[in-house]
Image 1 (cartoon, rainbow, N blue to C red):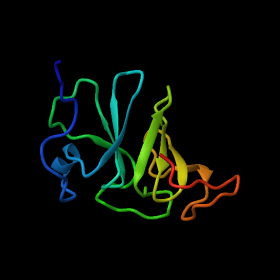
Image 2 (image 1 turned 30 degrees about the vertical axis):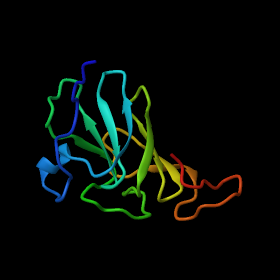
Image 3 (image 1 turned 90 degrees about the vertical axis):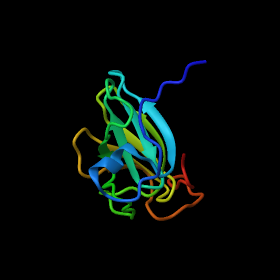
Length: 134
């Protein structure tokens, strides 16, 4: 079997420098859009990165959800442990946030997400609550 590296390089992201956008802390989910761009939910760095379809191994990704730089929290401008994702045909990114017990939608170029499901900061069993979605 042949393996092809589409994103990432050896090592763990340890700083906020641009070259660290080619490294992951805890990659938890992958998705691909209709154009062949690869999206990676980096749970440990609280961000989602997009790698262009023609990018080479080691190329820096673009942050498309979350603020990056290991920032987490409950505001809609940041993510908390993104564990799952889906990309729509219009490149909207839906992120299941394990740490915030919610799903957010990030439009292309957005600086914050929109709450789609769950109630941030609280896991629960009510019909409107989520518990650590993936």
